[in-house]
Length: 210
Image (cartoon, rainbow, N blue to C red; front, side):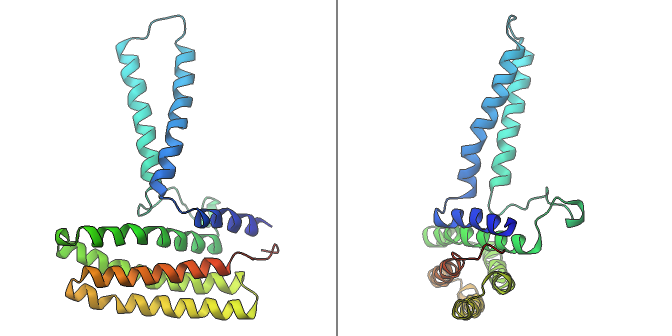
């Protein structure tokens, strides 16, 4: 039941894809508002000093920036500790989260290479090459997750096909990178995104036993 709840919650992000940064933006004002309410209550009846106001604003800004940083899809999350400490996701959920993050990053990279190709230097092309390695490893996550999440034989085969296709696309992406072909690179990522979309469709009827 716990696994099903995790998968259902994460699938809702796929059904309504929005950037993690936007999620953080939506959360941050509420967080700051709560800070403001507590601070204003404690200061009722006396005029706040300038130093108090500056201190509060600094704390509020720090909290907002912290949330935005955590929300960044390509930012690592240092809050995850060892599984033995009870602070990190179990393997299946961690794999699923990486697949979701991979899918959410692809449109951002497509936009970058499509609209700003002339600005991409060698260092950035190296980073784009690294993303292809991440894309390939995403196929490994999909394969492992499907083994414990998909039981229907036909869907399992489709999932295996998706894994193979995604990894072939990741390997094919080396061509556009070597030629610094932004259009070709974007095409590889668009096809990869479609593969991930299909994979998530296969997970919509995951049984409750998970």
